[in-house]
Amino acid sequence: MIFFIQTTIIGLLIYKNIFSSEKADFKQAYPTLLFMQLLSAYLFHIQTLGGAKNSYARILFIVRYPERFNKSLRSPAFFLCMQQFFVNMLCEIMNLATLAQQPSFQELIMNYVAFAGILEIDNVFMST
Image (cartoon, rainbow, N blue to C red; front, side):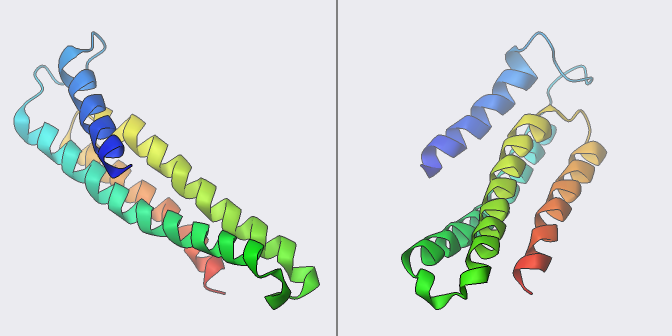
């Protein structure tokens, strides 16, 4: 699975920056920007993976051991874990779609920080 994700990240970067007719605003896809795009995509993937695995483990725990939860709190706990899982997956998809298309380091870092901030919002609710 990780090999598929890594291949997808690299493929999107190469396609968008080198072979696509709708290239980003820069004139030439220089190696330092490609490296930074790849690095930020990997770092963001590592950050997303932990949250997705954690929320998926919580979903499985709720499904396997429903007796450990108050009957009125099972559904909210399940939906909160599902929400966290789908937000992580959506941010991963948006990461692949947008970070690979940024024409400058400033926009790359700005979008990386924005996605990282989005992922931290649901952790506030999960920790309570």
